[in-house]
Amino acid sequence: MRQGTRHKAQGARRTVGLGLVACALSLGLCALAAAAQDQSPNRREFTIVAKDFRFTPDRIDVMQDDLVKLTVRSQDIAHSFTIDEYRIVKRVPAGGSTTFEFRADRPGTFPFYCNLTGESGHAQMRGQLVVRPK
Ligand SMILES: [Cu+2]
Image (cartoon, rainbow, N blue to C red):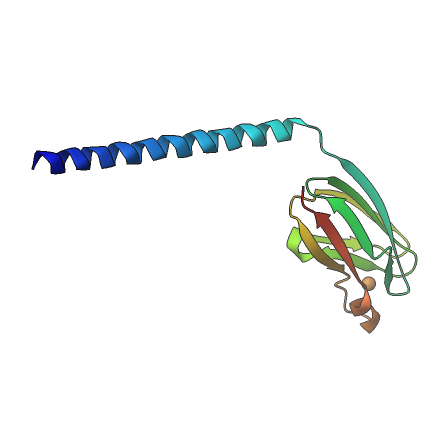
């Protein structure tokens, strides 16, 4: 009877101990994340030209967490620049450009495309954003 009680008590203590370790670990991770945010991000700048239903270049390579400044310029009709996974949808006026910034916080390969439908050629406008993990 007494032994059973002691076992139970030890079990409870072990659980508390594990909880403390988990807390310490997550605090450590928080501290790391805070330290990472203090560092100024890598800034990258690109210009993509939209013309003849093509994006040039059609591939952009960045590192995870880079701050990416992108200018998309049309040399003919209106287009758009869309990356679903980053919730980016930008309209590019005919003969004009649009500039925007985003943080490439998700690693992976993400298609970008023009989502306009007026002419069938827009559907051919495709490229890739490649975000290499840190
Ligand atoms: Cu287009």
